[in-house]
Length: 342
Image (tube, rainbow, N blue to C red; front, side, top):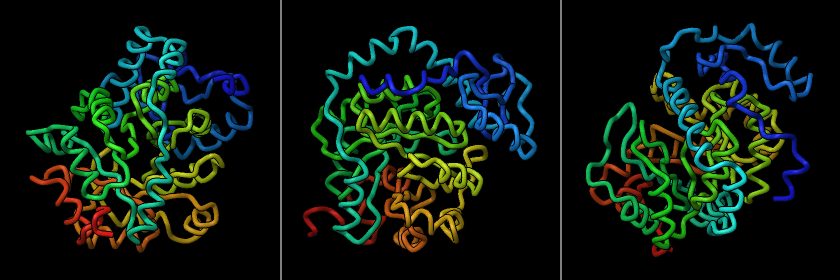
């Protein structure tokens, strides 16, 4: 933990307006300024001011305009309550008893090398805001074990309770059951505190969503994860977010979400679009691992995003809904990708 001394103080999201880089005030109770903390460098503040004209107007009302805003407003309140119960200093102490970190990106690279196909991050997911309950007889450990037997390289475990019916208890149960796949904590991260909390519950990687976080916070949180030995999957949806994220030198793991988090509409051609031209060249030059996310249901879908340039895929709905998730993995790829197939 001594490494933290060399970093700037953790950005205090609860002491400034909650605003996304898209220009939305994510918590109207705290105003709708787009400014970064006063501790931010002047050039970063200037960069944000220069881009302000291209951003939509902040939400000045008390009603969220879309699902993403609703989730983030709720998360802002929830995290503040959790921090009161377990302050950061207490979380840091809890890390001494956390299980060791496993190499998330390494597992995906190994799977890609072994099968010649994108490494699979299989999602343990009971429900979603757009689809409702995906699996009634939901046993997270049983599902995780089935994914692992089917050849998943890693697992994504939903932690959000209100909108996805997930929990940190599910992640801990999967880890305690002896599942060897590294675990991604699928949560809406808005504060560094959540990273420590996820690590204390056994997470090997976390998700950062570019539509929610300013560049400065993505950079800082990525440094915290690296210090803790965790992987940071930075998720983008459009060209602007991809360009922002590629401008952060610490980023080495990018997820392209084919789902628009504001409307929840899906288009898998989004992956190809964001990996074309100079963006794709830079990603290959920096050896960034790219994950295709959302809308992947068939072997043809997998082949499409692989041809576009992804080294891994994150899939939930199409396999968690199968009566036998292990066979669902084989069906997704059109072949057996388990270790026993080698």
